[in-house]
Amino acid sequence: MDLHSTRITAVHSEVMTSVISKVGTLFVFGAVIFYIIVGRSFTWLAPPLSDTQLYAYVGNAWLHGDLPYVRVWEMKPPGIFAVNAAVFAFFPKSFGALAVLEGLFMFGCAITVYLLLRQWRVCQIGCCLGALVFAITSNLTYVHSNLTEIYLLWPAALSMLFFSKALPELRGKWIFLSGLFTGAASLFKLTGLGPLLAQSAFLFFLWVVFRRFSFLRLVAVLAIAFVGVILAWLPFALYFGWHGALRDLVNASFVYPFNYSAAIPKSFTRYFYMIVHFLADLYMLIIFILIGFCAYLFGLKHFLQQKDYSRLRVASFYILSALWVVVDLVSALSGNRSHSQYFLPLTLSIAAMVGLTYSLQVEAIRSAKQVQLLILTLLVVPLVVTHFDKEFREFVHLVRYGHTLSHDKELGHDKPSFEEQGKQIAVFIKGIRNKDDTLFSWNFSPWIFMALDIKSPVSVLDLAYRKLFSGSLRQSFVEGVMRQLHSHPPTFIIDDTNDPELSKRQDPVYLDFSQLVDDQYECLKAFKLPYDIKVRVYKYTEKKEAEEKLWQSPKPATSNVQCVDHSAAVGE
Image 1: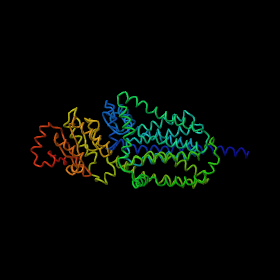
Image 2 (image 1 turned 90 degrees about the vertical axis):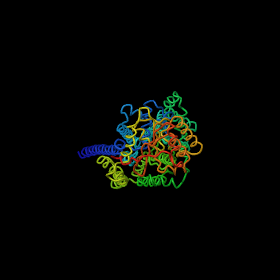
Image 3 (image 1 turned 135 degrees about the vertical axis):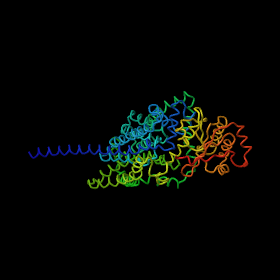
């Protein structure tokens, strides 16, 4: 009877543990959904006026027959444009729909992180921890909206999951699927190749250490993965090749990004600043990983002595996850620019390594529940507090007042936002434009093209890329754009140069551009925007009229057309 009672009690305990585990998992994924909803709401309610608008514009233009790279040029692989075009085909120009799709991608990625850690034989709490850490860290910066890095996260995670399933036998179908999803990630940005690079390094490590498979086997496995990558790109290669734009696709996707990175001299000081600045919010995670890595090194000697490739335990995947983090960090720094979104893929690999490190540490020290709770508290609480301060408070303020807390700090609570004031320019142009009118901007202003649904007469929207290239590439780019502007002058030009005369003396490109404006354009209006930005709107006139104005100008050293300042109308 006592034995029977003991068995009943044991079974009851197991059932209760299972129920609690399932309830805990549901609670964690409820938190995951919460953090994703908060983060993606900014795409819906306040899409930034930068790359977010540019990718949306190119996608919308593609939907209406303007081929990327040929009719609308931008230096990104075609994935982000294809996603925007597909969304706008069903929900025209809807950033709300884009926000929902972003949320689905991120939630799918969080689930994949959980499944990946399960595949790595991580404990249940470690799996949930990885998914939660990813959901929080990938939504710490509210300006990350409709970016390439957001969409490459899920296929990158799937690539690592399928690669893990291929071990230890290196089964071909899983290797192929791993390569296919790596290719899908790279369709958004070349840094999406990160999982494949980490996997290749891991296979090389296994070949060197265990010698269980031959070098030819290693090459064959990598070849299968690369076939998957190529297959992901094949439909786009065929599509652009059919339209005679394969070379344009290759240049924009593979060539120009390296020139873009090389335009700024490499600097260790800048790299150090980028790491410290952009990873500051993840300091507890990084400290935890470094401590775990040091502990792992002590146990690595015993693992290498076993050389039992057929029994890949959780410890061996630590090498893979560490390589993944290193590759993502190097990829972020290789952009050679201080853009926070470059570090977004790192949140995925760090989240996976945090879950794995937690499981290893719990297994190694056989810590009591109080110690485990302390570790979880030290890892999660700082992230929750940081998210509350940087994201959730901004979200609540946006929902309540229609603008963020950052707006209050920079402009004042009662002042209209930069977006609202900027839209006055679009309203003005919309009131005087004709259907087939075109627009060109001196600086990066994709939002106005999106707001007006207007085209540029040339292959680019602005001359901002003059600052992003160097050497002969910059010269050929500028000369090509200026030649197109002379042969196909836009109806409207907007210029936000604060001091045109100073810019003429300092920038020969602006001197040529301003000469075109002075000769053929009339200034209609000037708008003063926040941050001391002054935007002038010009309209194309007949050349003879422009020459008359030039002849009448009393100051030949300055612009022959003067803008009337209509700043008072802004924000009314």
